Length: 372
Image (cartoon, rainbow, N blue to C red; front, side, top):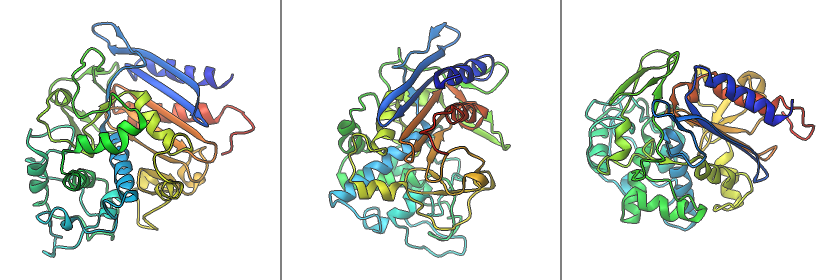
């Protein structure tokens, strides 16, 4: 089978009872080599998934904020080695021993700040929680202790929310305006926002199950590793929700693909040296979670360091991440491949076998010019 047939087979198998709907796009050298919208955007209403469907993006918001940060640095508006208290003097969380260390913008970009998702219930972590202003959210977050001193560890968390607050303060605007000016307008991403007005294109979210369950408001979903993640489907319809740089945006698959391709030598908005830095390991040998063995972290996602240890067919240097509403993306600079899978099913579309099914369908296609 060719690439199209292999990817189609992976999608068809998942649509039986693992995902409700998806849009899958694959580009090489900026050219589309695969595109398919499949399943339902709203199963109960029998509304078919379409390519222009709007998805809640979750952590796909993070590389958008990171790109804006790097673009603003190129323009001399900030330096990633600046202390964030230069901009937010009140954001001074303590470590558990009571010290108040300096947090750099770089720490926020690389998830080495000590800020995690283990936050008080009055803090909004991006996809659920109280409807308050971004500043109030960050002031509450500043009361939570750091998991470690900045630069001394790696932990995924709300650092990008703080980064969003920094960018907004520098720009003298809200975060939406920052991302529009420095990323979404230059890349022509018209549907990427913190608020959705066009509900006719918005996908209905579903929770894992056999078959997946239509989410209620709010919905707690069992995470693959244990514990529960909380989702608020109606949050994207509330313009008053804090503009979460960690996970608050919505957009189309085509919008997101423009961002991925911009890091893969197609229509870049960043300088070549900035792109190289963005795709390169930025955390040295700081420990990563066991499920990310063989991978390091850069400014926009996880980067494959040892494909064998990572158990991936992707070559070293491949960057990947996703979004818990049900998405995954890959930037392979060796083969100039950009792979994006957007689904409306959590957590299967993000952490489940579907992501490997699509990845393996691409790399198992015996094109001699695709290197692993």
